[in-house]
View (cartoon, rainbow, N blue to C red):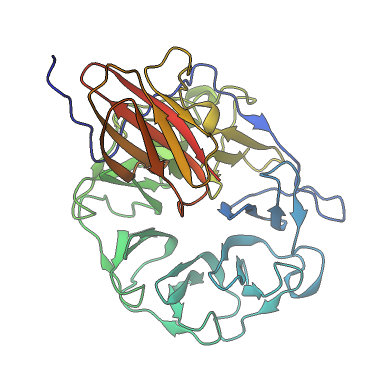
Length: 416
């Protein structure tokens, strides 16, 4: 009998079928004055709701982007405002940062109030919740910084350590990262109250806007034309990623990920003819492929995002009205249960997932991963049948990897 192969206990490399990947055009974002939204800044998903922050206000979708409702542009204190950022807090309040003020809604976006104890006439690039604090990043002329609130926006305090213009937050467990346009990346370990420069390796005026994690690496994108950077030591040192792909004067506008699948939108010398304006990597940023099949080229796509479950990517085209969605679940290679050595049922599962193999199997190792690549549950069982308790797991898509002495398979699991 062959030696039993051990399952990886970290990130697995899922198999993706990208040759026929298609972005589908989804619903238009139009104000009640029939003015089409352009200049999008941010896509974010919370629960079953998607938000898109645009130059024509904040839009909301309850059907994964098929239809959109303008929440802010035509009425009240938010009328006419360019919305840069959005976040739905744990208490249900929705925060929206504009080119002038920060706003809050306590009724799901039906009505809004101006948060008057934050600086006025400032641009609020991002808002996030970390630990007990809400945080905003902002710029007002040559002044910039981060403010935090421990009472969902009733009072605010200026954070310390910010010495350059800043853009988007990234929460990595108990650590916060923040793009710094001049100094690279900032880091905070006290819920955003104090900040320090995170590591070395960035050129001067790197223009970093976003930070994200994929597996063991952090990634940071530069909009000033110096490409994409990575760190394998939690931000202590940074190096250029895939320099042959993100080459020359290369602006990387936005990055996002779901599991091992990363997307980067780029323009400049790294986007010849506008034919590679969205790139995809599924091997930790080592190699990148064109991921724009199904959309009109040439053009560029300056904003990327995903829904809360990580099952759909979203983008908008330049300053145009066209929004697109890519269904990640169609890209996960699914095995036929008729030909695989293992079958699972019921799928979708609510509390229990049954795994059935053939009678000749001895010890089977299993690992259940979420779409971020994290192991949710792992172990071994003997024999041809096993029942896995999935009660209490978050609803969404998962990947189950099973391996015995001579057989292995990867299956998609849906938990309701």
